[in-house]
Image 1 (cartoon, rainbow, N blue to C red):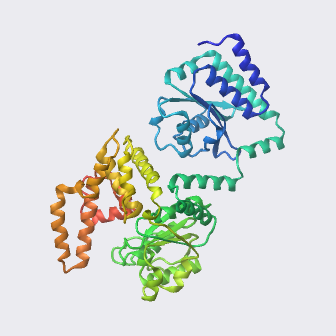
Image 2: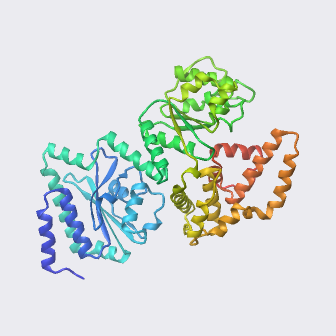
Image 3: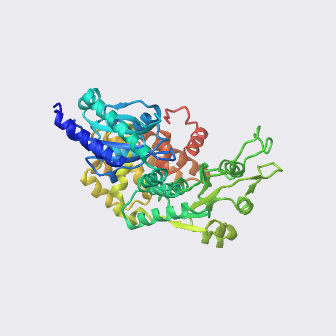
Length: 523
């Protein structure tokens, strides 16, 4: 319904009387949602550092519900409008997947079924400084966008906003910017806390303790030793420590158990040409790649004794020598190690160096088993299904109540990794628009997913138990497991590697050795 002159005058009065950018934005947004039939609206302002969009005002929900948006999120419609100076129209928010944590928080507030329109706002120097975002049904947004009266009011808002910023003294402007954004260190800490809330899922006391320890360790340069059962997420926690830290280099993971013992030294330190048979060219190692970042040594207990001595020397001197080389090179990296083995017992057995043990455990973090934090199963399951929906661009309907009760009654000896693997396969079985029920989970836990091949697997396993060649039996079992997992996940190596808890590169190496490359494998 068109506004009468009195209503337009009331809006203009409220805009003119506003004495701060926040108050002005709130007056404009309130009028837009009240008079134009829009569901919600907000304004984001670029911070002084230029690397974030900060929520300035919103209506009709609370500002605290919104999060900052990183300018690196180039698929974000608000970032698009700010960087290009052009409006952006999104027909349905639910279609925006993997845009960024800040936009996902905004989409939750606006409603996933609604459309979104973003409009850039310029300052007195004609630089885009903020973005207005309005949400509602697509027809209402189009009408609002094309309404000459609202376009004029939008121009009035833009002019008054630029004037308010210009009227601020330098000290007032600095204080106002500080009120919008934290200092760089505090902002990074806030970003790290948000990262952990989104990436280390759990409501239990144990989960909260782990998040607190991750934040504490992220601010330190000391080595960290992660312990816990297989599948508790040690590799993920190592990545989170790196992401929450100020280090700008790469996170370089190395699984000491997955790399053949005769290749691990070359993998770590690189090699010169001719260092060994087949070394036709020089190659940089993972230690060089980790310079300025974090080197993560998973399953450190499986590292050969000779390489342990080289690692200790590297940690003490921060220099390494490529295999077959004569020169040493520096590398500034943060070390994180992980193991499920009792290193103290390995020391007593003569399989692990005591001096290296004390060097890598300057800080320790034990990850609890999933059975010790049952309250976290529900949020973990919801997160895993949400990730599946994003990656597969589908809409599995979550867990049915009986399915959640079933999961909470399981022991999960494989911990979070087992839960993730079970739910990924169950989500494929359920399909779009269908909730995962107890029957599906029970069939998978009982082996029903592979029942068609169960007899063959049983026969193969029986044959393995009769073996007199342990290395061959282990290789055969590993191939059977990987093949079954790839089949269950429609050939996706990325998801198979994730569900097995190994790097994709390790899985690719295994598939190549087993001549599985010719099979249908999607990345």
